[in-house]
Image 1 (cartoon, rainbow, N blue to C red):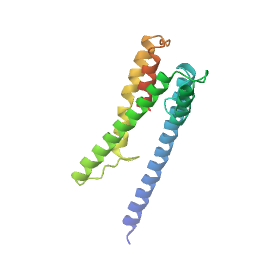
Image 2 (cartoon, one colour):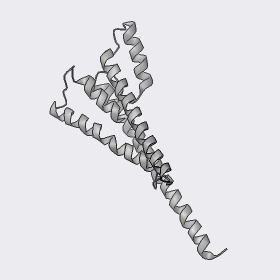
Image 3 (cartoon, rainbow, N blue to C red):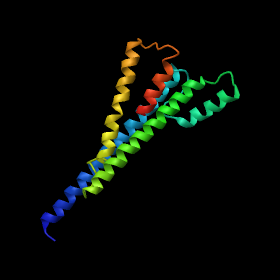
Length: 158
């Protein structure tokens, strides 16, 4: 075994460790941002979550049962529909990209995680920008009819 091959292997391992470290930091940032989005949506948009669907299922049950403190069912359903739409679109993007790469005999990987994942995360910025545009257009005080739209758009991005 030559010194060059050992050096090459060490450099490859060092690069992989760096990628894993970057990926872990990015995943932590995504988790924190998801929690922040949920906190904001819960506190400012009618006590409905945009990423924590288990809570929304509980709120939906409370609303159906007629509990007086339950959030508006329309808002809960809008958030759940937006989230389901986001999962569907992301799955389609990743599955299509992976299938295209497989057809071409390529590996659909990037440095930190697969390229389709990066693409899907990039696309999720569009609903975030839409949310911000609506939020600023209403000066941060959306009406009751606009809140379900905001929840659906934000949940779509989540």
